[in-house]
Image (cartoon, rainbow, N blue to C red; front, top):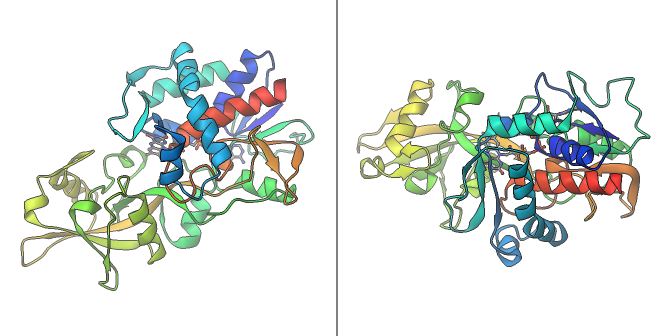
Length: 352
Ligand SMILES: Cc1cc2nc3c(=O)[nH]c(=O)nc-3n(C[C@H](O)[C@H](O)[C@H](O)COP(=O)(O)OP(=O)(O)OC[C@H]3O[C@@H](n4cnc5c(N)ncnc54)[C@H](O)[C@@H]3O)c2cc1C
């Protein structure tokens, strides 16, 4: 059994396979395990019900959404049982339930449980990879390629180019709707410079407290129910990828998840970003849409089997995490939740 990618989905698949008595070969392209999981806030969550999930991600695949609703709580218990360090048993969002872990501790626990991870090995380019073995694609989607093609910024691990997708397509796999959709954040636009350590607290997550304009000066409406501002970020991407958040002085003291608006604006300024003071006292911050993970991907069934264009399972080929698309199309859902649920399902399916 081969697993490509040692992020959340790949490590969970490997850990579950070993628990069931099979030792997989885990290939990781990067120089460390953890993928984007290590960089994340590690809040692993689900909507409260399938109806809520359907409402929030209306064009998503209900078969996959149901599995996340039904299996996530057991999966979280499993992570805790292995020693994943819990930070909070709450998500601090009334629309969701889940738990927050320490990302470094979670990665370390999973990497230990997964066994030997061969870092620096890229699926598809290593001559030793025998693809006739059962193979789980867990390469983290194609955020880097999507960002490059649309002139956006990258807010993910630096290795997820879409290798799993390419391999699936070469094997005749079908892709889901929403191949242009992504989960991301508005970040300070160049010349601002920010790195992995700033992915979380430099996010300009206060569009709902600002007036938002595209580069041509046309307003962008922020929807009341866009609580993650993922809809706003995608609209910015559709309009060329850059926008201005204009904040009135009275809103500078308002809270965002990462401090007050004034504090977050200051981080944009200190990173070298453009912050203009307008005559009316408002501050205009230049932002860029940044891609964290892709939402479209390979079509899988409830058993994590990759499906062909004819709708039949491709022998020996599985996908998990964001390589498998469709569970959050039309909205936003927890990538870590999908990764643990479908990583476990893929391993169970192969081992049984
Ligand atoms: C700043 C930030 C905050 C986030 N916060 C949250 C949060 O709180 N909650 C949440 O649910 N999600 C969050 N996410 C998203 C979450 O991290 C991802 O959805 C999740 O990690 C996806 O899991 P994955 O296994 O599919 O991909 P990843 O965890 O990214 O793992 C993919 C792995 O595949 C490897 N790889 C790529 N190509 C190849 C190849 N050809 N061969 C071998 N290996 C390859 C990569 O190097 C990587 O290690 C956040 C992400 C970021 C960046």
